[in-house]
Each structure stands twice: as structure tokens, then as C-alpha cells.
Image 1 (cartoon, one colour):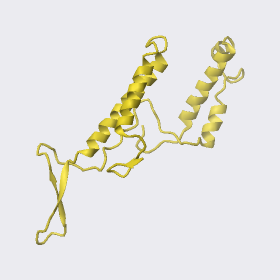
Image 2 (image 1 turned 180 degrees about the vertical axis):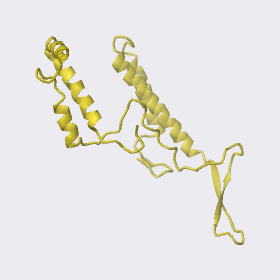
Image 3 (image 1 turned 90 degrees about the horizontal axis):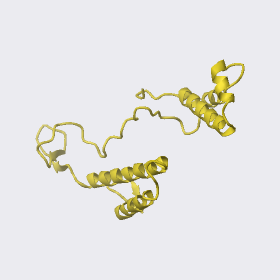
Image 4 (image 1 turned 120 degrees about the horizontal axis):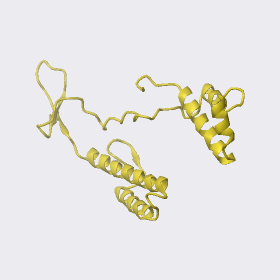
Length: 170
């Protein structure tokens, strides 16, 4: 295990990440993009994430500016930043690229569900007294596995809707 320039531990070397990507690519070939769409897409998404990781690691190795000594009478600062490229617009300098915002259609949720989330999840199950008649009839017509999957989707949707929001999340 090594530590990168930003103080983060790297458990996999760049070569190991590349080898993992190649292994995933060869495994992906065993799945049909139509018949095994979920597995095929899982491999594609994972390879995209590995490529992004490698690109971020590469970018973090390239300095964008140099810190230089600064000693000008009347100024308190002792250093200054000198850009290595001159075609850069002024702006904040981050130690690491800013994290991506929450993608549309996603929501941050607590690792452990709140009591309200659990209650809403349990109460989302179809019921002959509380569900409208069309929904209840459609539910009764489903097989046992379809009913279980439907209940899981309803539970998930209710729990996500009941999850507390973060200020900058839509």
C-alpha cells in the first residue's frame, strides 16, 4: 500500500488497476449486451470508473503551479503561487478536483436508515383496505416472486422519499 501526494492511501497500483480493467473487459465478453444487459453494463460502468480513477491519479501528479518565496516590504505573505501555464483563468486552487454533485435521479441517504424511513418502508406494502382497487387487483394477479419484487420497490421508494435531505441536494 502506498500513499499518494494528497495523503490518500492507494491499495492498488496503477498497473494493478489497469490489469483489473483488462480482466473485467475479458469477463464482459462472456455476457451478451442484450440478454445479459445488467451484467454487461455493470462491467462497462466499472471499467469507466477505473479509467476515471487512473485519469484523476494522473492529473494529481502534474503540478499546476509552483509556490515561491515572496518578500515584499509592507506585505505579510511569505509565499506566492506562480502558474505553470499562462492560459488559465483565475479561480480557486484545490488540492484535489471538487467532488461531483449528486447526479440527477440520485439522492444521498444515511448509511443507517432513520426510524421514519423504516416506518415508511413497512407501511408501503399493498393492503386491501388502504390501496386503491386497481392497484390491489394488479398486485393480487402477480406471482409470489413478482409480489415480493413489487413490495421491495415500494419499500425502497418510500424509504428514499422519507430520507432526510442535505441542504444543497435537490
